[in-house]
Image 1 (cartoon, helix red, strand yellow):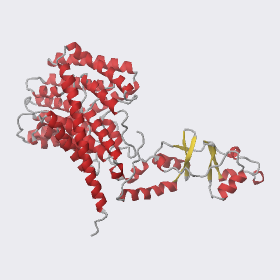
Image 2 (tube, helix red, strand yellow):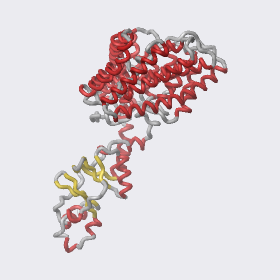
Image 3 (tube, rainbow, N blue to C red):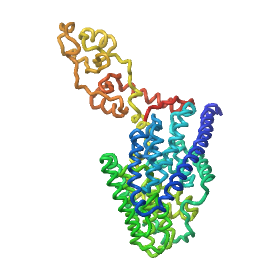
Image 4 (cartoon, rainbow, N blue to C red):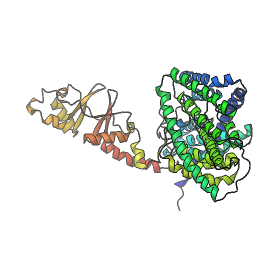
Length: 563
């Protein structure tokens, strides 16, 4: 058996794993520093501050966040984890590294001021940025199919570190790009990066479980039935939460900055004061880790728990609408824990830790469409494997009522097939820039002799220097009396209403335009400048070329463009 064809791929696999270990270690250090700064350095002081300071801190934080994004991130959006998902699907683009420092600084201000968002969003973003940067330096070692390997590994490392949950990190990074599928060929890099990131993080910040839960449930049929009920209810609630988050994201980009910051600051202050009045503590302030401990305590009435669930959801969506930079993973966890606790109280078992855990698995699994990562998160964060089976049931049931919603803007339903992937490629990869053109002052005789008769073209673009003016076809020329061809200019006959393609289109968009025009070629322009033409023949040849590249053992060059 000839194994020579496997050796280059095996070598690339070892190099990828080695680079994933490097990425994981770097991400672990970065996330540990970020967590120390936000939680130990800023939030711990805010929680001890007077109530007036706590209530007004989010307003100040959102204002500073907007300023930092404008100045240090060149006006970039506040999105963090969404940037990972977005870039994962941009096959020929690397993650734009220019706004990374500004976005991370903005996240420190948002989270440090007590906005109800999570630290995992910036952690995923930092991890994917580090992974993408390392892969850009070592692009020659990767095939086209592995172009996002270290991006995924970095994202997995970010989640693994901030939650002290390496398996959760790997599963989340693989699950979250799709609603009903998994990323391919990236499991080993994700696992190695997540493991190294976890080891690095806990060496600095310790191994204390994120959500210590006492006891172990003695499962019976009633508990398993409750898991189904909580899952279905959590799916509906997560669906509403996802719709609210999507609306808040739209508002953050359409509302005037001053109006949205002031409005969000006022609403957040009111929510924080309301949570103080309801629970005796400002539990609507900050990421919400304290809320888990509060929810598990059996002495709180169901009405209090439901009230805090509503306030925490309002606090998170308001922070998003105000332009806050943070994650949504932990807000989903908090909402799930409160929902589960409310159900437990309603059925007469307020002291059971099972119901909050089931709520976490179901709400998180539905909101981000990551049921496997949600179940693994429950197992790792609680340290109780007995919760896995009911958690899995709850997470699976929540998918039934979640529909097609998600808190992420850029998730795709499933992994695209080969044809879909090709149609999503940029049109620039197919443009023929050497295609013949004709100047507008050429005669029809010259056009026919040199282009239509000599090169056998049925359609020729009319270009004046670099500016596209129109197109002239053979049937346009044939309609003119041949005795006048020597005096008739191309510009007098050309058509200016023929469809053209923009350089920024995908191949799929160009193919649709060719079909509508019933033509075999399409002029490609950039603004009004002529770039070239794309033909049906080039699209058909691309399929053969990409199949060759996809199965070849050799590395590809770095095709980086600015994101």
